[in-house]
Amino acid sequence: MQGQGDLEIDLLLGAIYQRFQYDFRQYSRASVRRRVALALTALDCKTISALQERILHDEAAFPVLLSYLTVQVSDLFRDPAYFRVFRERIVPVLQTYPSLKIWVAGCSTGEEVYSFAILLRETGLLDKTILYATDINAEALRTAEAGIYSIDRMKAFTANHQASGAPCSLSTYYTAKYGSATFDRGLRKRVVFSDHSLATDTVFAEVQVVSCRNVLIYFEPPLQERAAGLFRDSLCLRGFLGLGSRETLRFSKHDGDFEGFAPSERWYRRK
Amino acid sequence: MSDPREREREREPGIEAVVIGGSAGAVTALGSILSELPASFPAVLVVLHIPATSPSLLVDVYAPHCRMRVCEPEAFERIERGSVYFAPPDYHLLVERNRRCALSIEPPVRFSRPSVDVLFGSAAAAYGSKLAAVVLTGASDDGSEGLRAVHAAGGVSIVQEPASAEAPTMPRAALAAVPSARVVGLSEIARQLLSLAQAT
Image (cartoon, rainbow over all chains, first blue to last red; front, top):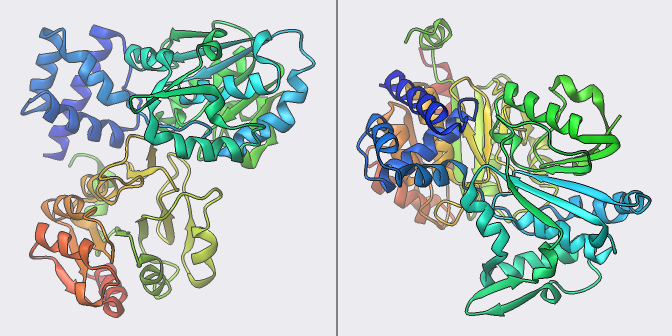
């Protein structure tokens, strides 16, 4: 029975790749198996094979499955120490550049993008920066672009923001209405939201900073290599790479292209 | 099973891994179990519901009292005998079929991230009958779905005796899901695990 389930998932992921060009074949299989099981319930399919038939013949079905396969929930200023290092040690380096490009790869619903935009405004860098916010999920990108989050989450976001060394309250940046918090539109005037896949797309700009957190945790080692290669090729010499708190390039062949900058906060620097 | 490594594992006596889940009161309960396990014990994977702190204190709390190595794994870290793996705060911990850890920030399940159900469900798929699962004291019903999956895959289900639990909700929910689970007093759990590890 276990072999059967894996076979069906292999076939499903192959079909998704051929039909929709989304490549989940080298994603954490344990995670994919779990997400597919939830999608089966949501789409009322009895078997994975039935789900495969459904996405091939019902246009409305694939976006639903995609949202199950990619749903991530992050916070503003998740891991405040990460942003504190950016604020206190990386911003002074970035201030020496005439203009900046920062790539938030796998931005999902935008929590990290707003974290950076706020921090860049607080340090006077936002107006000379272009932030590239990319993800494979178009629906998540639309949410990110809207910049509206549930008001229930603001308490935790505010505490994180303070712990990152903020000079003012997070409430400076949003207006609360009808149970939601809408972030200041000015924060995203320097943000380019774009569809981009670390699994299938290539380098698109030279940047000074790449922040890609809790994306590599889903990638099996060969796919991690591909993504790490994109980061290396995108970063200028001495550019900064930030990863999630349980991610490392230690096992990657690209490890030698980076040196630790603040390794316990997962900041690395292109050699 | 066509994979020769899987066939080999099937022939090995005893369980290959233990998964443990707990919430309120479980920090102490878990310590009393882990301190009894020898350095060569099969891999142990743990989800505790505790507030997310960075850096997490779990390793510092348990390492001095354990003969096994205690860690919070990185993504895709290999799961090995003699090690205890704690779900890092604010991440789900899963087991890959190829005996590696997986981490995820998918939404909380039953208000929990990490979730006991997520760990148990993935471990059941990976280890089948070579798994023992333990539900400890706790004030939620997380773990009951996962224990059901472990049981269905032929694994051993152990539930801390509700009367001996600081918070009996979680053990009770687990027992409701798997009525045939072994109900074991806290002081007896380590001994049961030791005998499961040696079983032929």
